[in-house]
Length: 141
Image 1 (cartoon, one colour):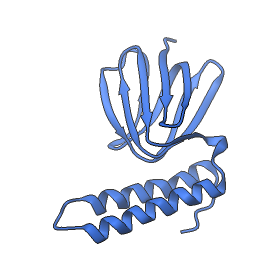
Image 2 (cartoon, one colour; image 1 turned 135 degrees about the horizontal axis):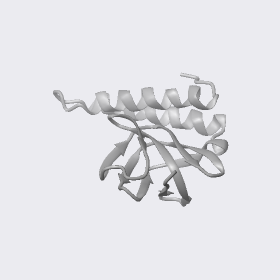
Image 3 (cartoon, one colour; image 1 turned 45 degrees about the horizontal axis):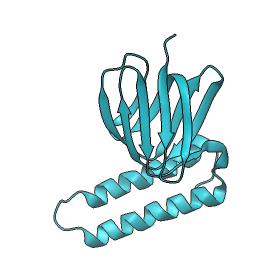
Image 4 (cartoon, helix red, strand yellow; image 1 turned 120 degrees about the vertical axis):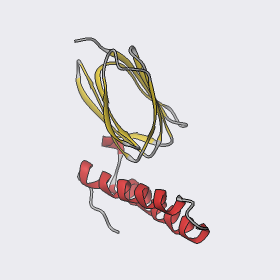
Protein backbone atom coordinates (compact mmCIF):
# COMPACT_ATOMS: atom_id res chain seq x y z
CA UNK A 1 0.00 0.00 0.00
CA UNK A 2 1.27 3.48 -0.86
CA UNK A 3 2.16 5.87 1.93
CA UNK A 4 2.03 9.60 2.51
CA UNK A 5 4.54 11.63 4.47
CA UNK A 6 2.76 12.68 7.67
CA UNK A 7 3.95 15.58 9.81
CA UNK A 8 2.28 16.88 12.98
CA UNK A 9 3.53 20.04 14.66
CA UNK A 10 2.24 22.26 17.43
CA UNK A 11 3.67 25.57 18.64
CA UNK A 12 5.56 23.63 21.33
CA UNK A 13 7.11 20.82 19.29
CA UNK A 14 7.12 18.45 16.36
CA UNK A 15 5.10 15.42 17.45
CA UNK A 16 5.39 13.15 14.43
CA UNK A 17 7.09 12.72 11.08
CA UNK A 18 6.35 9.29 9.64
CA UNK A 19 5.34 7.48 6.45
CA UNK A 20 1.65 6.70 6.98
CA UNK A 21 -0.83 4.54 5.09
CA UNK A 22 -3.74 6.64 6.37
CA UNK A 23 -4.43 9.63 8.58
CA UNK A 24 -7.85 10.02 10.22
CA UNK A 25 -8.49 13.71 10.80
CA UNK A 26 -11.13 15.38 13.02
CA UNK A 27 -12.01 18.06 10.47
CA UNK A 28 -14.41 20.88 11.28
CA UNK A 29 -16.90 19.75 8.62
CA UNK A 30 -16.66 16.09 9.62
CA UNK A 31 -14.11 13.34 10.10
CA UNK A 32 -12.01 12.49 7.06
CA UNK A 33 -9.35 9.96 6.11
CA UNK A 34 -6.37 11.01 3.99
CA UNK A 35 -4.41 8.41 2.03
CA UNK A 36 -1.93 8.40 -0.85
CA UNK A 37 -3.18 10.15 -4.01
CA UNK A 38 -5.72 12.25 -2.08
CA UNK A 39 -6.89 15.35 -3.91
CA UNK A 40 -5.25 18.52 -2.61
CA UNK A 41 -7.26 19.82 0.34
CA UNK A 42 -6.86 22.30 3.15
CA UNK A 43 -9.20 21.90 6.12
CA UNK A 44 -9.58 23.21 9.63
CA UNK A 45 -9.49 20.89 12.63
CA UNK A 46 -11.97 20.62 15.45
CA UNK A 47 -11.06 19.26 18.89
CA UNK A 48 -10.71 15.52 18.58
CA UNK A 49 -8.47 12.51 18.18
CA UNK A 50 -6.21 12.30 15.12
CA UNK A 51 -5.13 8.76 14.19
CA UNK A 52 -2.04 7.94 12.12
CA UNK A 53 -1.75 4.41 10.73
CA UNK A 54 1.76 3.29 9.72
CA UNK A 55 3.84 0.13 9.39
CA UNK A 56 4.47 0.05 13.14
CA UNK A 57 0.78 0.26 14.08
CA UNK A 58 -1.33 3.31 14.86
CA UNK A 59 -0.62 6.43 16.89
CA UNK A 60 -3.31 8.67 18.37
CA UNK A 61 -3.00 12.37 19.15
CA UNK A 62 -5.44 14.69 20.90
CA UNK A 63 -5.72 17.97 19.00
CA UNK A 64 -7.62 21.10 19.96
CA UNK A 65 -7.83 22.71 16.53
CA UNK A 66 -5.62 23.91 13.71
CA UNK A 67 -5.22 23.14 10.02
CA UNK A 68 -4.44 20.15 7.82
CA UNK A 69 -2.94 20.41 4.35
CA UNK A 70 -3.38 17.26 2.31
CA UNK A 71 -1.81 16.40 -1.04
CA UNK A 72 -1.25 13.22 -3.04
CA UNK A 73 2.09 12.68 -1.28
CA UNK A 74 1.75 14.27 2.16
CA UNK A 75 -0.42 15.27 5.09
CA UNK A 76 0.78 18.19 7.21
CA UNK A 77 -1.10 19.07 10.38
CA UNK A 78 -0.47 22.35 12.20
CA UNK A 79 -2.28 21.97 15.50
CA UNK A 80 -3.09 24.74 17.96
CA UNK A 81 -2.44 22.20 20.71
CA UNK A 82 -1.56 18.53 20.33
CA UNK A 83 -0.48 15.75 22.65
CA UNK A 84 0.06 12.04 22.17
CA UNK A 85 -3.01 10.30 23.62
CA UNK A 86 -0.86 8.64 26.29
CA UNK A 87 0.26 12.02 27.63
CA UNK A 88 -3.29 13.31 28.21
CA UNK A 89 -3.98 12.91 31.93
CA UNK A 90 -7.29 13.53 33.68
CA UNK A 91 -5.92 16.89 34.85
CA UNK A 92 -4.92 17.97 31.35
CA UNK A 93 -8.29 16.87 29.99
CA UNK A 94 -10.16 18.71 32.78
CA UNK A 95 -8.23 21.88 31.90
CA UNK A 96 -9.11 21.47 28.20
CA UNK A 97 -12.80 21.25 29.12
CA UNK A 98 -12.52 24.23 31.50
CA UNK A 99 -10.84 26.29 28.76
CA UNK A 100 -13.60 25.38 26.29
CA UNK A 101 -16.26 26.30 28.88
CA UNK A 102 -14.56 29.67 29.48
CA UNK A 103 -14.41 30.32 25.73
CA UNK A 104 -18.15 29.59 25.45
CA UNK A 105 -18.94 31.88 28.38
CA UNK A 106 -16.88 34.69 26.81
CA UNK A 107 -18.48 34.17 23.40
CA UNK A 108 -21.96 34.35 24.91
CA UNK A 109 -21.05 37.54 26.77
CA UNK A 110 -19.72 39.12 23.57
CA UNK A 111 -22.52 37.85 21.32
CA UNK A 112 -24.08 40.49 19.12
CA UNK A 113 -26.72 39.51 16.62
CA UNK A 114 -25.98 36.27 14.84
CA UNK A 115 -22.18 36.39 14.64
CA UNK A 116 -21.94 32.65 15.30
CA UNK A 117 -19.12 32.86 17.86
CA UNK A 118 -21.25 31.34 20.61
CA UNK A 119 -22.39 28.53 18.29
CA UNK A 120 -18.78 27.76 17.32
CA UNK A 121 -17.70 27.83 20.98
CA UNK A 122 -20.56 25.48 21.95
CA UNK A 123 -19.48 23.05 19.21
CA UNK A 124 -15.88 23.24 20.40
CA UNK A 125 -17.00 22.47 23.97
CA UNK A 126 -19.08 19.51 22.78
CA UNK A 127 -16.16 18.17 20.74
CA UNK A 128 -13.78 18.64 23.68
CA UNK A 129 -16.11 16.75 26.02
CA UNK A 130 -16.34 13.94 23.43
CA UNK A 131 -12.56 13.53 23.51
CA UNK A 132 -12.87 12.17 27.06
CA UNK A 133 -15.10 9.32 25.96
CA UNK A 134 -12.82 8.59 23.01
CA UNK A 135 -9.71 8.24 25.18
CA UNK A 136 -11.24 6.77 28.34
CA UNK A 137 -11.32 9.81 30.63
CA UNK A 138 -14.19 11.07 32.75
CA UNK A 139 -15.97 14.30 31.96
CA UNK A 140 -16.64 16.44 35.01
CA UNK A 141 -18.92 19.03 33.45
